[in-house]
Image 1 (spheres, rainbow, N blue to C red):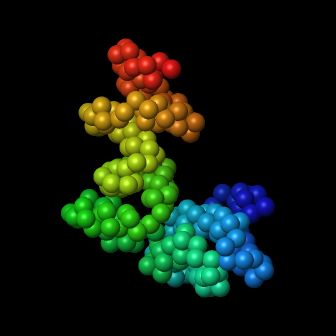
Image 2 (spheres, one colour):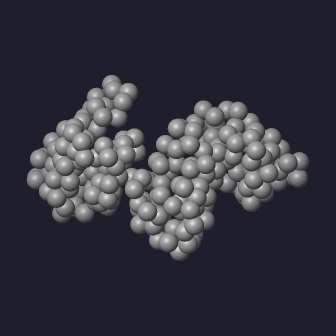
Image 3 (tube, rainbow, N blue to C red):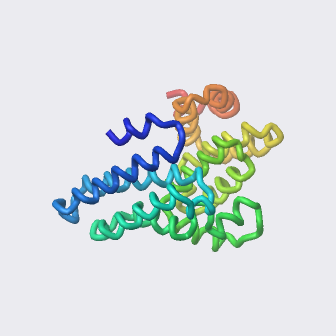
Length: 236
């Protein structure tokens, strides 16, 4: 129902208002649910991720203006009432709201602006959030064609010991490099560092997202040489 109502709008603010209503109603209903209820965790995480995705459209200054200010206040009030569920995603969203929004962390700002920052600080920051939040940031930047910023964030994630295992960021790097014609050498270099299984998954995921031209480019650059070399995994 929430998805249906939110989907009727093409701009983020009305969608946030729908989510605000949903969270407030769910918070009122939660008094009868046990603290360990898995369904509650699922709903809260889904709402938190949806809130976060929409907050990417807003800058810090807008956080202090109505009606967004009222919406954000409601989220924090609901989180206080839902504290016994210890939902990490909702807690993280409220923390990000208190800090001024999803783009305001000083380390993130340094990454996006290509300013010097130690890998230790970068890794500490990246470890402080759900990796999916960084994926949503990267998707937003790519959709807005802010490719240099997207690449900076994606490369930082790929250099993280744990987040680097998420194939999305490797797929996203190929997307950015493909959108930057001058980066063909980096495109080829990253192909060489990609194992066969991961390469096939990336190609399939790219095609599923409707990026047919990029998927074909990846096939030509990655899959064909593997087949020519007789890689049985690719043949299968």
